Length: 335
Image 1 (tube, rainbow, N blue to C red):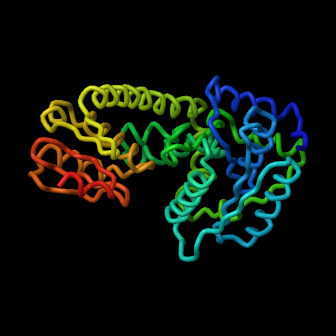
Image 2 (tube, rainbow, N blue to C red):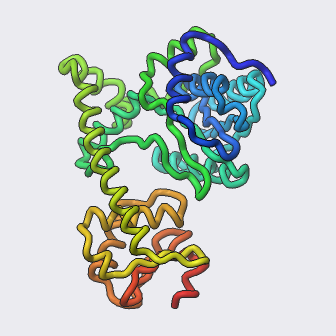
Image 3 (cartoon, rainbow, N blue to C red):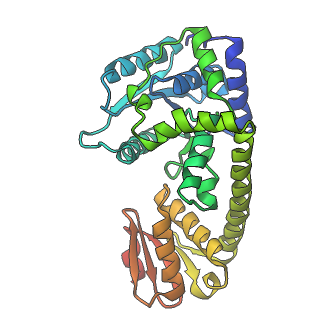
């Protein structure tokens, strides 16, 4: 096994990773998703010098097939992984995905497959502080609620046993750039990131810099909105967890059932969060707000026998007394 790179520029990044890990147990392989750009390359170099290395640590690259230097990026990431003595996996997104939302969905599907096949504990992503600010502002302008304004979560489920980890959300991009520069790490940036056509790119390269010039406390104010939204979400999550512990019934097949009378006794926000937690627990991934509202309405105003095929892995049914969340392979048991 080769020695990880050493540089004072890596220290704040490694400290952020170690603080993120805390004293938690790592129960399986961990992968760093590396595109070849600055953010994920700095994350990879830093992670190789933390206790994640013994997980064991691996490197995964997803080729989206959308820019001319994509093969160069894949090869550079593979060479860096080899120089660090780490496992390397590369995947290609199937042709036909053009929109950013489609590419993102395809990327996460590939990461889920890797997590399942390798029985991984986590996949690390290189999102940083500026990504967080950009996300909160983007959602604020679109009228998002508190869940959207809470920004990018540091942790979220990827599969039933594997999580997505974003340990660098407190680190500025300039810190990552400095680490790559001082270590002379190979970088291949996606040129589409500089295209000012997409609204996210325009926000990143034009609007946020202008807002920072006009308002010197812009970052702090935006982060304050995120922190308040996150605090409210944490209260809701705790209330929903308590409700599920006290009220829900769990079967050996993975089905969860909630008494309709109990569900109707809580407010709408708590009901939505209860449905979100149940869906995430069975599906292993997030579901849309629109779907959660449909499930909430099914619990409030639905009729016996109504059913929503909520997800390829989940079906939800109203039986007159209970709202039943069941894996799709198990729903017939409860007819």
